[in-house]
Amino acid sequence: MFFPAKMKEVCIIGLKNEEEEILENIQDFGFLHPKEIQLPLETKQPESEMEISDLSRINKLLEKIESMESKKSNFLVDIFGSPTITKKIPDKINLKTIDKIEITINHHLDLLKNLETEIKDLEDLKGLLLKVKDIEVDFSFLKSSKVVKTIIGEVEIKKIKDLQKILDRFNMTIYGISQFSKNMGSAIIISHFSESDRAKEQTKHLLTEYDISRLIRRPKKQLKELMKKLGRLKKKQNTYLKIFLKQSIEWKQSLFITKGFLTNLKEKKDVQTYLGNTEKTFILCGWVPEKYVNQITSSLKNYNCWMNFEKVEDAPIFLDNPRIFKPFESFVKNYGYPSYKCLDPTFMLVLTIPIFFGFMMSDVVYGISILIASLLIKRSLKNQTTEWVGNIAIYCSVFTVLFGILFGSYAGFGFHPIWINPQEKPTIFLVIALSIGIIHTNIGILLNAINAVKKKDSKTVLDSISWFLIQFTVISGVMNVFGLVKLSTTFLLIPLILGIGIRFFIKKLIGMLEIPGFFGNIFSYARLMAIALASIYIAFVINFSVNMIWKIFMPLAVVIFIFGHTFNFLLGILGASVSSLRLHYVEFFSKFFEGEGVEYKPFRKNLSVEVV
Image (cartoon, rainbow, N blue to C red; front, side, top):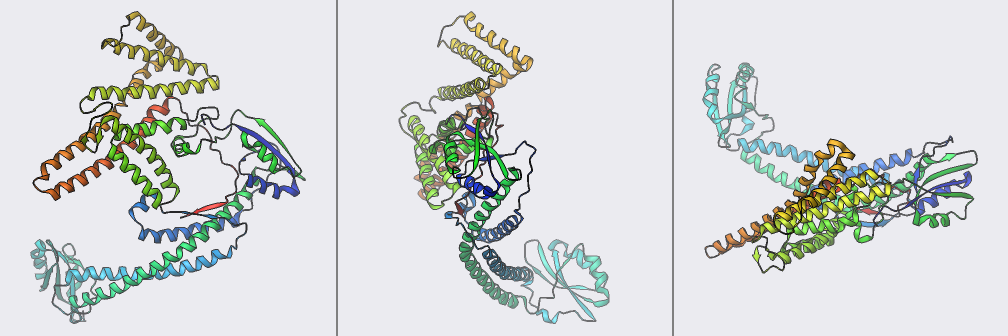
């Protein structure tokens, strides 16, 4: 829990004729992370081209289905993803089902694509008809001939006179104008065929010509007929899309299950690149968590193979935390994996992230709202994302309610606080925030010292001690100034000189330059106070405004109350989330966390898949 799981290096030597069965058992065991063998033995490339090809086809088909589903998606699905169900992967699968599904999907998509193209074509014609609908002319009589040419185009209303001046040179006139917006209109020009090209060349900077080949009758009548046809096509498209989406549920289940089956086959073949081969034997080496050593030994006891386990100084990182800590592992993984013998900070984040979030939100009503929202999202959209977000939100909501009670904050309605009223005592509130920062920062320094002891790095241990000594002097000095303690100057100077001396000895001038930045990091924790006060004051202003408007116009007051607190609620979540992560990634992790570990990726058989 406090460190990555202890690992052992294992080497397995087996008979060639049992290779297939032994690899299958190791895949079922699911805890061996393969490694390359540094021995002059024969290796071979995996024969997984067929699986790669089929997986590529499946991914393309799933992308096609997803593109159709996106047309019917909703707000929550766009943010948190679609609900998922777990399906078991069978031992055998008929791969010909991919061909049948591919043919069916492509047939449906072709139908929808043809409808979409036809609808788009009609929408373009609709746009043109809307521009000329007020022209009371049957366009079937305005077709060009060997003698005359009809030109219809878009022109700015203020430039019509300029257009007419140019047309006068060709003895032409504007037959009619239909204004379809404040500044734009459609103009009809009838010209002699021999002059039409020259006229268009001269007026192209003023007139954007339309393609009128599809205008066949009076615009209003044609528009009315077009709207009916467009409605029928859209209804047909919607019906086809519903049929597609209904059938896609079955297709996706089959595709995801097949994908899981093929992935297992591919990984089983890919692991052969790690095998060292002789004429009659093979060797596979890798890392196994120490607590599973007996299990792998037991799983291979019926085969003629030899296993050797050794302790290691470095290995892939397996974060083996209790289930309630698991949601917070992702924050560590996003930053990087700790080194093998270094601390896993997940156990700290379980407390500090919800505490920081709750301190900044610090409102009972908002905290209860977060709790209800997280439970509803987990219930309505069952997938890995909502499970992760929901679990973290539940932790954060508890501390939001707790700090709301301590500070007497209830959606802007002031109640007697159990601890302190931030509005009345902002200075003390700032001191509390900075105190949290000092504690958090020093925990990081302490963790750095523990890591250094594990790695037998004496310089890093001395570096951590120097920070403790310098901080003691600065904090004690501030308390001395405000009369909180009485300490002699000599007593304060001794740890300061020692701390600075150690830093200079270890890092020379760079060590001195790091001191202002260190205290700057501590002052960054003032954001805990700033965001908390901002949320409290905004809620207070909203309620104050509601009280003023309530007697004048009650419906408006209700609207201001709902939208105001919704805005403050969402703004508070955003500010508290981002700032909490920043304080960990920038101020906390930088004190001890290197993130240089390699992720533990065991050779494992997937028994089930999540179907979206």
